[in-house]
Length: 208
Image (cartoon, rainbow, N blue to C red):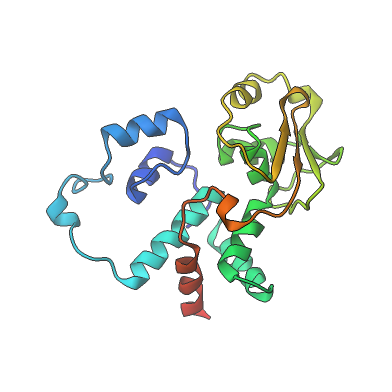
């Protein structure tokens, strides 16, 4: 699945759950909590058990959508996670969670992961006081991520910070200075990503 730029609600309806915790997506899912397409409402058409491969593919695509990354990037994260000691699935989630665009989103400086990516790519984010415009930049514990001063009064940044969704133990946010400190590598239970990562690992192990 490529980096997605189409209708966000449509993809979430396909997965059958809200993956971007914003009120408008909650409302859409409440009104149309069935898959998009001509047969979305047809329970008979949608009945039947998915194959193991289908379940694994679904979780892999869901993970790529949540972090807004391409298939080639997903595969690289998996390969890197497999080389590390410990649980491969948890290692992969930690690597994804450490992405700069993701931490900008989790800190509440952007309303969505897509907006966070744009904020980073346009040079509006600093890491330890230096501008970093690479969304995939891997943050280390102790690093301070901040919005560039010229953007701190931007209406979208202000609105996003006012409606911040996440309050994470590994990310200490200071709204007054529009900065956040990445305090520690997160444990799996602390990462708010609704996927079964073991299915993603099984998907890639099939291809190994």
